[in-house]
Length: 473
Image (cartoon, rainbow, N blue to C red):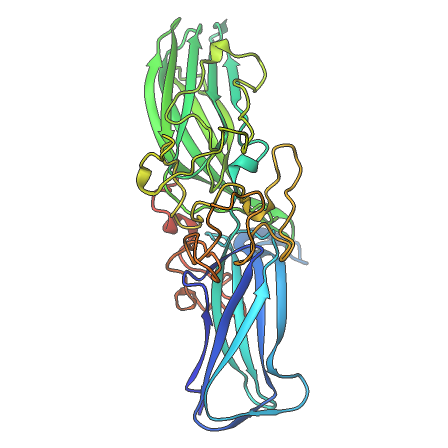
């Protein structure tokens, strides 16, 4: 007979932890009678895995060519820790009948990729508890937890930079060369959070002999997957997050328009520490032309998505007109330093209501993978500052997060300290993020396949399924 109860229970009510913090919980074991074991051991692991199959032509020894199915894959490990909760690798122990509780803890590295589930791969964090039985099949209890590595855009060197992108082309049809079609796109910054408006200014100068039928605006999420076995290869997926269409421009005409496009609410994914899965975001503006022998003209601006919005960003305003801008990417004065007298940022509030300082909610907080608003001065995750330096980590744990009893450096005494899950102010409780995948559990994972669960668990809903607002173009 097996054991009536052998499970892992996490202390986090959301099943999620920030990178650089402690993962804590208990192993619960119930025995109906005394049993001998070598020991009870526990293993924590974080890893990424990418896999897909493809068809390749292979030349056989007799010279014939055949098509074979080839499996491609790559894996990388971010951390692994294991130890005995009871017993050891040598000798036996007897655990008496009854209910037993074994607390555990492990420290997460400060720089980890956020938990991620996608079509061709994943980033997963697992815990396996094993009752080691000599000469018999071991008993195992398994669970998964999610890791969130937030990104405060106020500490990202490029996120606050305004960008101007200009593209130009001429059209040739039947040996007749037209005048130029010029497309200029400006944004006041490149850093945004899900749910936030992107204000942009678009200017089209159509000196060509073709008609611009429409101007298409869209934000794309570009996934890059990398495998290394049996050879290095990459695969790309483009996911359309949001789109907008504007009227076109006749031959010889021009047009200038200020327009907002709203990012959808979606899980935040920080994969900076992962080398085999990459996610990038691009704002793409296209002047769609009518000529059959001509191609559309597009301008692309890379975006940086984070969890904490830029505090003094323009709220609901438009980007400055590109015609008044110099050729560089700086179109407005840089943000004033946080912490200067009279310039302390006002934190967003839930529900999109304006804060007391008049700044509207910029989205992000309360969504999957997002923390609750931190107090001024808290810089989660050791994000590089605008000048390229990194903030000093907390002395007690070496991460960008304070322990429950540790004050936030530089914060006023009136600022509440990190407290219970999802809020600040309570004592003796860590702060837990919302999960990136709320329905992810050990029971939802497939047991077989290239992304299946063996010792290391695997795949819940794919990334495109977990965010219904993301549609492939």
